Length: 241
Length: 381
Image (tube, rainbow over all chains, first blue to last red; front, side, top):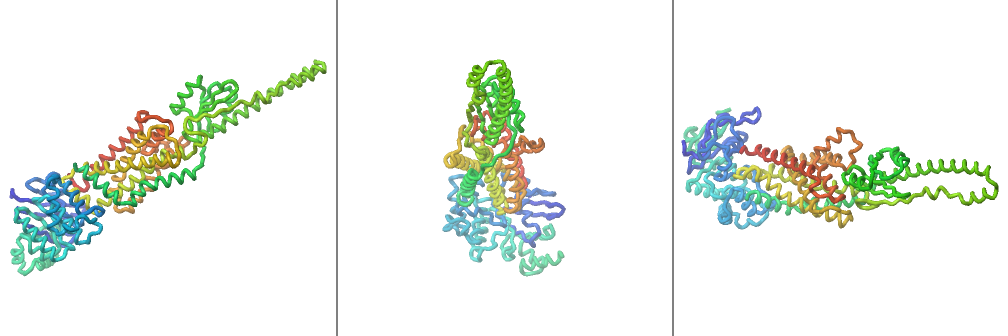
């Protein structure tokens, strides 16, 4: 699959003596939202960190944009949002956006337009000049997401992006993610919210260091003979134990 | 320029943290002022005294005083050269019957030690001389008295010169640096200045990077194509700017508020302290990677910072065991302290401290490389 955006093959990752990832295979194609679900501690974040090149795989390969990670330059084409908000709280929202835009290497001319766009997506345009320390938890999450959206990256890697965001805004964010997908870009997203997993194009179920199921939500439901991804999750976990 | 953007961001963050800023700028001045008020302490150290034209009996007596070593010089010029080279702490020059004492006075405890030793030596010599003279005179007088007739004896007695007068030479004191009121504090000041720069830059930069790590902004930063050295250099630039202002403020405060004399160029002092600040920054960043919380960062203070004071030269090292002296070679503040002392008190310029600056730069380069490499822990490229 030469044109895959992310291609993880037989990924193995150990921390000390503990093997977190035993054999992870996962592909993200262009124009695709892939959801990664699994119980906490299953290694979802490790999969993401290895794909980004923050960790090096102990076995197997992580290929992004056709190049083996870790590769620093590719990071400018990836928007990443971590589980923690990771914001500079003494700076304003705009200063945070500007700083990360500069780090991503966005040109000066495109800077303010890019900031305007992403802040509108997460509905923060009126709060941009307030210090982040005065933001609510949801606002921080939204700002964090908007930083990942900066510079229209071809690939978005989002670690639990919708935690602490209210339903109306969550819907709005998913609409934006859909439109990003429709532009031909790709998204890898981890989530705890199972009905969000229904909205993805493909779901990967990570259990015991392996992707034990990787298919479209409807196909998964059929395979496990249940009517929701949540039940798929519970059933798979039950079988695993 | 990502380095510039990082520098700007760190500076803005710092400027908004008013308390830390006040700590960096006001605390050193407060402590320096307190110390200048409180410190009148003296300590015994061994002193090297140069003598020119001093009689052997005086210098022998001087040499007999504990912690005093006497070196003879043929001329005042030779002795002055030796003092410039830091070989001797004071020159005693005898012209005719009078003594002229010149003190380097970079260490007031040494100055007072020389003063005391010299006075003792002189008194001892005088007493010895007087005793000898008295004995001789009495002997002669006794002999004469017997042989001479009475009227002549009377005349002689009235014409006898008092030996006391001849043995009371005039002593004048000269100070190369400062004056007779220069105290222990003045010697500590150049080192303390470096210490404050080191301490606050170390602590605040270490905390800043620790926060960056624990809040996740570091991994977010590393998820952009930023180069690792750009992060380290950005931090260096911002804390460099801060250190410049801090040094200027401390130097100004010591000159105007505490009335301390700065012989050399203030600019040179700033240069040295800037290099020291960068070393402290690199140290702080490096050690912050071994801390998991702010509290653990604070735990480095007794381990890393306090020994810096002991080996920085505030406490004279001359009389310590040689293995303890060796420890001081790995203490960055020792080098900056040496250099700033020379600039402040002797008016030397930067070129005389090539070695000190060189060692500091080696510290800086090694620590910076370690830091750039160390960031690999968080991103593998």
